Image (cartoon, rainbow, N blue to C red):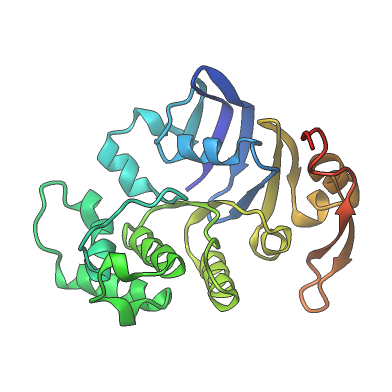
Length: 264
């Protein structure tokens, strides 16, 4: 399923954060959103998973306006893993994962044997099956991140939106999650801060600066020393990965002090 952000403008408290953003995410591809803090990445994602209404412009899925869909149909189309985690009180991991089937059961009811098998498979894929009976309040941040990814997977979306999905994860689970994203039969829009992880997993990368699109293309086209200096304020050398050939970013020192302008 194709996703298109078409002239998207999004404001928070009357201040426009995202400016005229047009971005295509082709069906089955992984597109990464990169940019400095405050560049509008998360705000753009919030409009895609219908947490924040656009000021103008449109979000289109196979040409249909996502915001014109019934909420249940939209939830069957787009699943999100966000940075804002709810408190799940005494729910177990298995119960939280099963919540991903809610858009398919608007009036409640028990899950079918096939759905229960889907939940078990999702928990196994993200390595939380052994936590199935654990309460949410006993989980670490990384464990909860993987549980919420399993919940998103059992939603069986056509589009998966991920905001910093590797937060709180150790190296093994970071690599496992990115491998899962790359192999998933869904369209993926993902915000990442780690440039090398983005280069490794993304088919295309879009860079935001000041809420506007600064660059878009393949990792080779976008991750250049010039762009990193201009957008991120860092000097870097770009070298090919010895096994994949994908660009690797070797960072130097910032071109300007991040503490400049702060009173001593």
